[in-house]
Length: 275
Length: 275
Image (cartoon, rainbow over all chains, first blue to last red; front, side, top):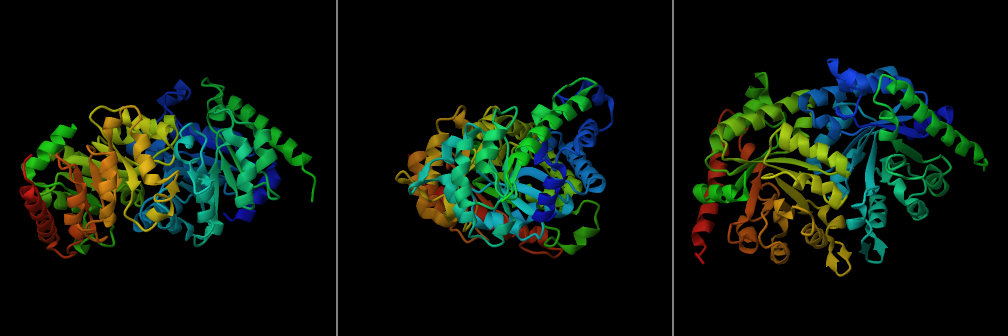
């Protein structure tokens, strides 16, 4: 999917919601556990109930790998289902990969070719040659960790590196890499005040924002400081939507939560004065 | 496996060699491609030929994920084969994972429980709560990236953070984490002069050292600056061993290369004067 197609979908749906498909068998409705592939059935039900309210789905690979080969099969079925049923959806493999060059190429192949995701999250610590192999794929997007939403973000990401925080250096350096136009960035919602600074460095890039909902970030604050002319935000919500209920009404409750988010987003989009 | 058991194996085998199982179907002997699971058959042959010369095997997950479910099955068969046939071998899942706490727990479950590796590599960028879930597993080892062997290592890892390089801050901070005794570190062999500084911070920890062989690092240099009283090093070699030949003699050639490494290691160990 091109960036323009993603922007078009945001305008059509009046939503910039990404739904995180972080499926934990201990948290899904127990009646699903009798099915042959509870993870896929759960995802399918959530996707069918929310696809008109969300522009993206983001399975986190950890939750699939934890169940071994069966989990990997559920992931493959999930991405195949989205790609075949809702081709306008932007798909994100939240994998946080990164390795030396020839190895990162294999990860890129795994997520962009074998699984056919539109995008994958990557970690910056190993630098340029660990990320550029992902950037080489046309119409695929590489979402690099900049400032994450967890407490540990303050261990290293905000350390002072020659007068600026490390995450800012990461953003600036990444702009010099080949095909950097294929970069997006992860920026946690729990630190909305940072968005002003981030937009000075990457005014045009899309930002994937976790931490709204269960992790406590404010949508309005993030939009106030982080939105650009093309919206430029994908707000992720996982637990608040997919675990809204663990009863037989989980589909309806998930839709209700997604609808709340979408309506809040629509109100924000309507408030923006056209330039 | 406990750290002491690993040290014992190093003494018994007079080797601190880890063989990287980074299997690329374009590089293995073509006659294997006719078999049902070429990746596993290749690994099995390499392992059988080198198990008395190596103390560890290190499959890099990227090379398995690139082949989807079939690749993940090859990975599972490989780790099961090692665990059942050569239980004294230390196993390393080179996965470079890391995410927010509840998600890292799922990764830990995937590699320590589902696949039953002795250790996994992790990335430090997300800080304490992204690594501690791995450290909670008894007799399992978490090998954190400190200073990697690739060119991109100089993009961020060596940046000056309040008067010291980032990788040193990563090492120091990690020592304060809960169960930090379960930490080992990745330190690239291409920068042997750094080992002196690193040993000031983590004198007792095991270091996993990639970059000897195909990437050009010197074993003697690494040992000179990096070895401690318990050896404290695992030297990884991947391509130089496993792709020593891509003909029908690949097993013999791989053993020859592993034997060269082991003999070089034995000579170094014999040179060390007992304290």
